[in-house]
Image (cartoon, helix red, strand yellow):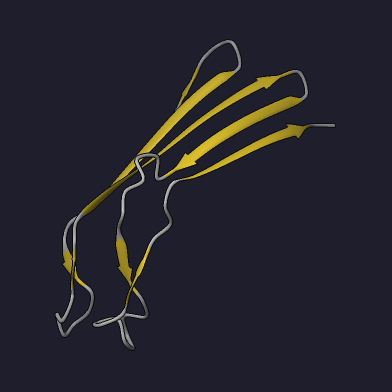
Length: 91
């Protein structure tokens, strides 16, 4: 995160996961992935405006579901790109 002197802030987060098996039985191998989240905010007076983009590059990736139970064979897709905007007024 970098905060400028004029109330503007920019942020970025990157998470990389190597290819791994979904469970101890090694029945399903999940591909590697890199997910990037981006954000910007602007603060002025009592107002704070935010914009966050999760999974900015719309990476398709999967995670094991209940690794203790059926995770060896059941995997679920994770969230595609999403955008969240907010305006906050501080009293």
